[in-house]
Amino acid sequence: MKKKPFYGWFALSGAVLVTFLVGGAFINAFGVFLPIFSDKLGWSRADASLALSLGMIAFGLPSMFYSAMVNRFGARFTIFLGNLLAGFGVASLYFVNEIWQLYLIYIFIGAAAGFGGYIACTTIANNWFVKKRSLAMSIITAATGVGGLVFPPICTALINGIGWRGTWLVLAVVVALAAIIAGWLLVRNKPEDLGQEPDGEASPVFAPDRPALNTGGTKIWSLKYIITMPITLLILGFVIANAFAMGTVNAHQIAYMKDIGYNAMTAATTMSVMSVFSLIGSLGFGSLALKISMRYLASAGLLCEVIGFVMLLTTKNLTLLFVYTGFMGLGTGALFAAMPSFLGAYYPRERYAQVTGLVLPFHVVAQAVISWVVGEIHDATGKYTLAFLILAIFALAGSVCAYFARPPQHIQ
Image 1 (cartoon, rainbow, N blue to C red):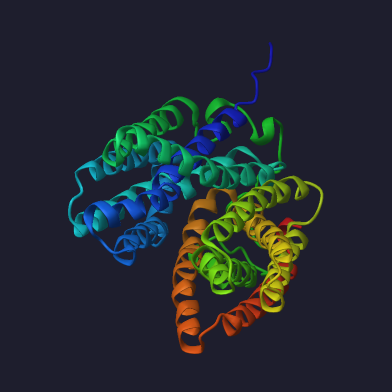
Image 2 (tube, rainbow, N blue to C red):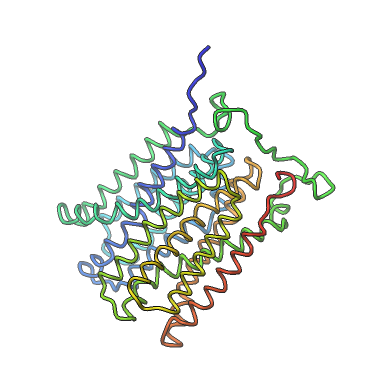
């Protein structure tokens, strides 16, 4: 009897489609609409941009709830329902006239996208792949970067052609189609549902109730046990350090470039170049992690961020600043792919969604808070020097955490 083709890559394509289309419509498109909200509806950019912050909090903070739903109903169901609801929310933006309406709708979109987004999609990759898990995870995270490159120009063209309200309707259809194609047609929860094995072959799948050899007992993988594991604290250490770097460059890099004398177009170009290097960093991490220890790669990624912050502290030369974007993009991209890869490799497959639900809020909150803290330091000192120095120290500490994040003894 002829062996059925391995279905994992088809399931992964559904998760990638969601990450690319929904992430692009929810996050990457917002910057295009921001000046329109100011020009057409009279809102300040600070007030309007708060909507995205609220949406991101709704996307990440209730992650423990999202993970519980994925464990109970399966990632396929949450991808389908969550993104259908997100599409409804995006369509509702057609009717926005008051700022409070924008806030409520973006909170709704964020919650719906969180329900059917990051945790569900990376759970699919974790369920279907063991040997090639890091590569599968990096493909999903790289799709976010591709959305950042593709959606802004597409949305700009749509706005010029059919208006900003009509563009929201087009994006809503895109999100709904992603829910149907991915959740209904492509995604399957795990290979066992189709009589297959992870990676398409017999793999050493991690048993959730396997005793940890270094505990001397038969501890079950409860949430309490996971939280008290030293490896969890080390992973949180480098995840938060990377979130600090990502939050700072996303919020303040353009402002810093303008402060030191460069025009808006040059400043924006540095962000585009960084996005390209971030994409390379994500895919590079996934490929190299098949041959090199993940903790060495993650540690190197954070050292790239250290180099980047040091360059910001020591040069205003444009050529060197573009070199900085390379280091910072490679570092943040690699670390964004590293987080789900570590969680998938170091914890039981059946506990992946739960552990991700524990770690993700730290990343989201750290990224949101640091942009405010850096802004406060700038306002108090009149420059970014102290903030960049502190962030370089955090990145260095995160590199140490990543280096010592060895696999738990029972999976070495």
